[in-house]
Picture (spheres, helix red, strand yellow):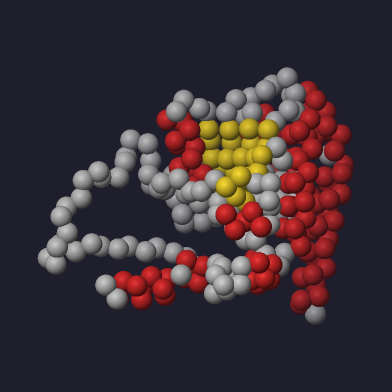
Length: 261
């Protein structure tokens, strides 16, 4: 009974969200036409709480570009004390209020920028309702696929049977079997202007995307040391391996390789 009540509540929330989006369509259309002349400048990166969008925006700023990072949800991967410019909390609200919360964030931020750069299929709107209006405003939209947002386990095992990152993946099954993600990918394909993938195997799932690997994890003005001390038995090389998914990053193999040294 409890599970049935939860499912009913979830369905009601989804319908409430969609009905509210429908009712506010005229307002969003009017705002998009009204603000079309406001071109904005620079780029807004949108992602879950990770450090790469933060690093990218800081390197863009160092080159004279206007760049900000909107972090969505909660997390612990903050770089230094902040690691973000805006933080959109993961709120638990009824469907209509959730849409209004997204509406407020959307019109607060989007008009300020010329380019919207999405990581992990993240936009202000959880259902991508804003993409139509962003295109009407002349905004350029970049979708940066990073992993399980487009990678599907069965297909990866079939296409790369000898070696792939899915064969020992320890993520829960919904990460790779999620109809909502598939729907968002279809919407992104329709409205996106540029598509990027972090690793080459992701091109199997989105062939037209450009391979854009991670940048070095350093901030402008804080480069890695160019000189290293001479290594010896008394001054060995120290290896630090940090991960939150051992299966994908191959931690057991790294440990075995180090132990063989």
